[in-house]
Amino acid sequence: MCAGCAQSRANVGKPLDAGSSIGIAKRSRRFGNRGRVNAILWYGSGSASAPRCTPPLCTATSKGWPLNKRGGRGRERGNASCPMRDQARTWILARAHRGCSKASGARLRSDRTVNRYIGDLSRAAERIQQHFGTLRLTAITREQAQAYIDARVNDGLRAATVQGYAKALETLPNIGTLTVPSRSHEAQNQISRAYTADQIRLVQYLLSPAARLAVGVMVESGCRVEDLASLCPAEERPLSNARLDQLRPDRFLGREDWPRFTFIGKGGHEYLSSVRPETARSLESIRLETPRDFIHRALEHSTKQYYALPAGNRLSQQWTRASQRALGYSHGIHGLRHTFAQQRVDELTRSGITWSIALERTSQLMGHYRTEEVLTYLR
Image 1 (tube, rainbow, N blue to C red):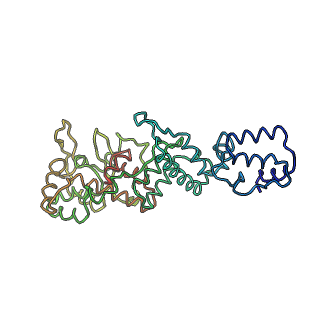
Image 2: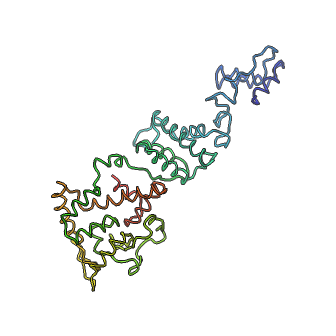
Image 3: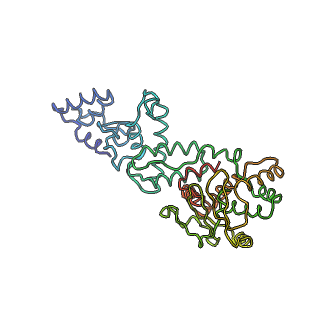
């Protein structure tokens, strides 16, 4: 029995005092007839035959029954004892801007949007509570929110659904912006620029041996066709112009025994990637005795080239001609970079790494640091 039930039974048969009458009148004005009934049950009716508190009217079981100005069905807003669903509803309603124009910048303007945010935040918060034991809605951390988003992605939910959960969670403090799949990622099979392994082999068959090897390096390392000219063993040219504090060693997970090479990308930025051992041995067979200058098309600077590999526009044109002959079309040699990104993200997620971390690690192998840039390659 709740405290309200016990108090109402103790008060049965007692005469109403002035304070009780005022309390009944206040609750009647505020909550209507139902408020008057509960107030009578609380203060006493003055009759031994007064009705007892029944479960539908009990303050511990009634739904949608605000008992104080702070909301939360008699509980203090944000109290750990308040269910996550109640906290989520209170949180979203406090940030609703119904009736505001779109130009005002308000996000929660319509009832449908408000209800959708309440539902999404409630479901997400409850799952986070079950998994992490978090009691307060505002205590949810960014790591917990991102873990929930990653789990929903792995469950196979549509990108639009996952984005809805992310937007609701981003209304909480200390969450910031979560990493979510783009909607174009769902249409990957229809508009992807990536090539399959069989398609790559068909095109390679029409290329020269050196160009065939260059394509293999691009597929395994994810480098740009322009960066291929700067290929150099990592032990001979360690990273210097790079954000070393942001690089993570587990980006090579599953490829620890692959030889590593450095590349010089856009703006002189250096990045580290790897190729198969057999590819590295093939590269050593065409190693130049003296590095030569490689002039980039439409650029004024040159790069030291250590291997007799075609690169840049020359290799790009060769690939386009061979692809049109072998496949009847060409997505451009940059599609090999799409192939690498999709394969590497899939490898890392299958090894147990979460989707968002797999994006981050893959981006570092490709010379990026923002996961948003890698999403472009997952289309």
